Length: 48
Image: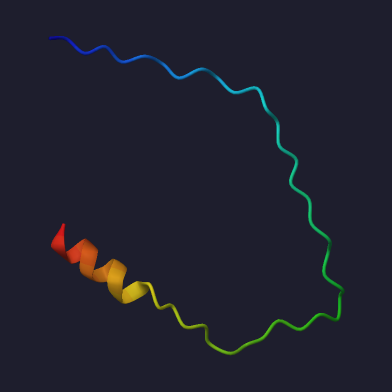
């Protein structure tokens, strides 16, 4: 049995991503954000 790898077809779709600019006086919150996935990810990386 032999296995051959084929090259995936090239995509020609162009995506344009746009977003509205935030106002100059927009204040981002400075409080810490909880990352609930970090302990799970750290444990998985230790096991690998």
